[in-house]
Structure formats: C-alpha cells, structure tokens
Image (tube, rainbow, N blue to C red; front, side, top):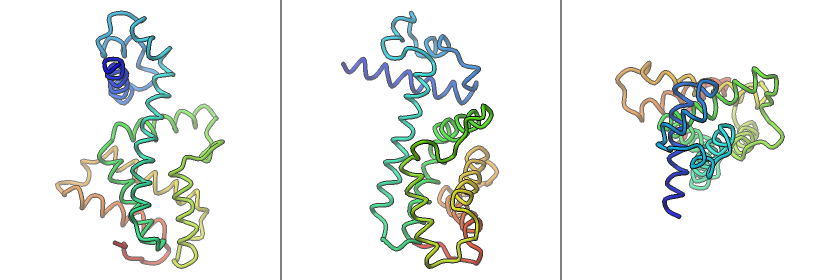
Length: 202
C-alpha cells in the first residue's frame, strides 16, 4: 500500500515538473510515464486513466494545500477585518512564492487555458473556499476602510494578477530577503485595494 501511495505521489510530482516546464499540451502521458520510471502504460494506468486525470488530481492537491494554509491563517488571526485580511494575504503570498510551480500550474496555466477556450468564469459554478474567504474579507473591509469603488471580484483579480507576475519574476526583486519580498507585495496589494494609504496590520 505504501508503494502504491508513493507511486501516486511520484506521478503527481513528475507531472507538475513537466507541465510547468513543457506546458500541458507539450506533455504527453508517455512523457509522464517515462519520467516517473514506469516501464509500461498499464503500470501508470493503475493510478490514472490519462493525462487529464493526472492534471485534475494535481489541481485538487494544490487547491487542498493552499486552502489549508489560508484557513489556518484565517483562524489564527485577530477577528478585526484588516488584521485578518493582512494575515491571510501574507499566507497566500508566502505560499505562492514558496510553491512557484504549484502556483503557476493552478493559477496561470489552468486559468489561461479556460480563458482562451471561452470557458473562463472567475467565480465558476462553485467558488473555491479561499476565493469566498477573500471576498468576505473584502466586504468586511468596506465597512471601515477606504476600499476603492471597484467591484470586489475585480480588485481580487488585480491583486492575484500582481502576485502571479511576482511569482514568475521572483528575480526582479533583486537581492532582498524573503520576508521583504512578502512585505513589498503586501504593500502593492494595499495600493490596489485602498484609495488612501492604509498601513499594513500585524
């Protein structure tokens, strides 16, 4: 059983590396099989029936890890809206910078492909728990802080776009420590979010 679990994890790790290096369309199921060291397709098919099934499992794994991180940040923060938003925002940025391949796979590749195919819907049929969490925090911020008069979904989209660019171009920060990168990104997100200067909380 342990070997089966290890093989499953190996396939996902190999697929993540290939999808982010070669792109989804540029990666075949045989590429995944060969990179994972499986001699036959049948051995890989005991775990996944095809490339799309691998991608779906990888997406679910990334979503679960991020959701856990953000939920922990939310629960550990002060209930005051700005402090909670700051804690959750930092957790999101830290996860993204620490997991650039997972982030790229989840946010850039998948969303771009949906947009290009005409199937893109930011909210989707069932919004993710972290999206709902952030939308609720934005609504709470509006009651006490100078949040810009722009739709919450648009504000969140702009902040995610900024973070996405920073994840891809981490070297552009120069020789600064990780915590400073996180602080700078938080300040830029605050610049998008608020129409007046609001200091970082916590």
